[in-house]
Image (cartoon, rainbow, N blue to C red):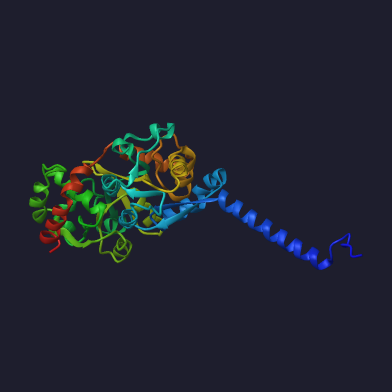
Length: 358
């Protein structure tokens, strides 16, 4: 009579254990994948990406069991990516310079920000129309100058946008292109206001440019990337720039200082928005809310000189001094009308390229 063994054979046991182990591994892997989600955020690479990746996102990732991955690029790059994938977004949140953010809002790429205490705490200039986006850091475009050159030549530091028209700076003024740079656009619009124009009427600025600042301009540059070299070689004496960008140049050992012009500067805000139709709306809004909090902005300030848009952000030492100085600048900083600018900018760009940079 044949009977089954009371105990399985060694081979059967090994096979069973292998199957069980494989099943368990599959279950734990699936569980881990289900629990840990990934959010993609578009923002500038370089200093900003490093600051947020190494010092800001960590607390949010740990608290929400999520991984935040940066999609690096300029504001124009990020906008193009978001627009190309409008119906099936590959990103969840994006950072854009304010002018480009207004374009994104107009394209229907952003969801309205959720009402939170942090949103209510922001500087008024950091709240976009309809709360479709919110500023994560603030700055302003004023004047930067080559301190070494000014000292050697015995020049008094500039105090006005119209100093760029002083004949003694002929061939020493560098200006970013209006058609490709927010710094250049801001500088021109503030000059235009001095001439009697406004953000809807730039005729006074275009009319006065050829006989004022224009003759002093050595070169119109598409971005500010070349400024460090031009300061080092003694080509650039004066140019539009933000205090934060000046700080980056100074950290590289360059003799550059920022001046708040007496006529005021133009507010330059980096905004964030939650991308419409993204795959993780609840988490994306939660991330956006966190990035407006004093805790997140304190880390961005301390490790990357990102000036907080939330005035409740605590700072100490060098960072506190920086915030105090920026708050002083904000008293005479003015906003520009991005709706009017974006409506008219194609025509302005064409005119600038044809008559100024010809």
